[in-house]
Image (cartoon, rainbow, N blue to C red):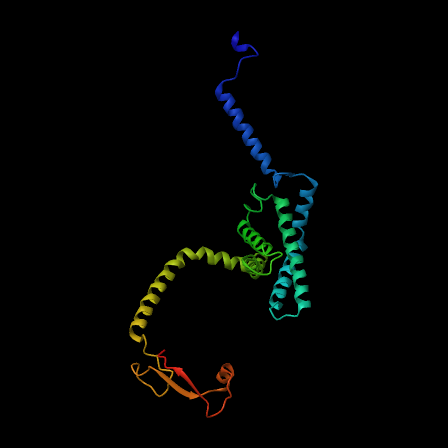
Length: 257
């Protein structure tokens, strides 16, 4: 009679099973949410999936990568200030396009959870490279010198690598090289050992044999001491602030190198 009363508790095994089921359902619910807040059937996620699957989506991104790489090739320390300002604005526009691409894919398939998410899907390795390049490039915003600027320049230099994933043939080549690395590593190790042996032998046999004195009249190392004089050329005379002539002598120390 007490076992059928409403106040009786279920067995411990039943409570444990219910708790595990609730945890599993909660995990599945999280996987159905993109960025932990956008449901699978929401209008934003549906539009994002439609945009990502569109044939012109990757084409627009590829054109942006190519144009930004060309702009990076044009940029130099000696470029005209007006051109430099235009390149800076264009770089920010390209950065915004690449961030929009990443966010659209994260919304469409999820960022972390799910088998087709941005960081765990089929192209997770390439997506991680894209994300690293974006973060490195964004780290230099508003800085023109220092470590942040160097990190940003490195990110912009790595930007052309993002075009590899858009070319199936290039991806096949890269994947084949990566899969062959474990086997090729032993060959590289053998070559490194051979190079080290020959490098040590070369240093032992030829160390110092190609050295000479900067005074052409001295042949022996023991005689390459003291100072010697010679006519001063135009460059040396300009650095010393004297008039260059055939009678101007410039004395310098003898060096065996």
